[in-house]
Image 1: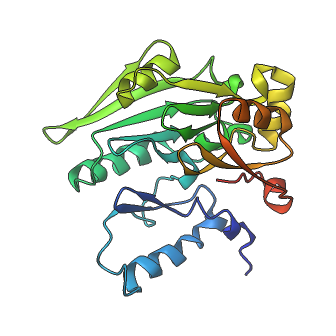
Image 2: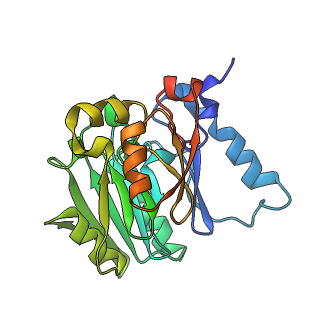
Image 3: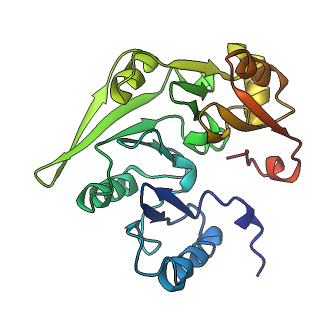
Length: 244
């Protein structure tokens, strides 16, 4: 049978430091896609037996790559979303910490469980060391948990306060800037988030790939000194896929 969703390449598996999360997908239809990753990381001469796996496609709880974002060499972000269970995140994090992949802390973002915000990267992405795009509609209900690991136990603590301040504190920065999709205007934000205005592909600090149709958000990003590589795109966005 055809696998048309295979073009959403960031979901079946994700690189996390020097390891790989080989995911168990939300939809059984898409679980076949992860076989490609399994064969690559098992049999390819450059990867077979050399890449730590921090999640396995045979797990029973679901997690997808759109909810896995590396923020720094020490901090990983994960989304508790429509497509990723909290139980999966706990399994993932135990493996990350026990296999010494390199991360010291994980920030878990819990937000509305619906298709409009199906993944963390549909509403929140990092575009520079100290800058993030965010969809303003999630900010009111967003919960953030800090997760560390000590004495073979996950320690989970809910973070409170301003999102920019807690990101800065966890990343060891003086401050960070949240760039709101659509400039914070809820009508423009809703329209451009639907066209993945909050979903950017950062290929270097301050250099991002975006859809050119999101003119308001793109203008704001450029005003912040970011270099934008604007692409047309049509097929991917119809399936709710952004540049990332």
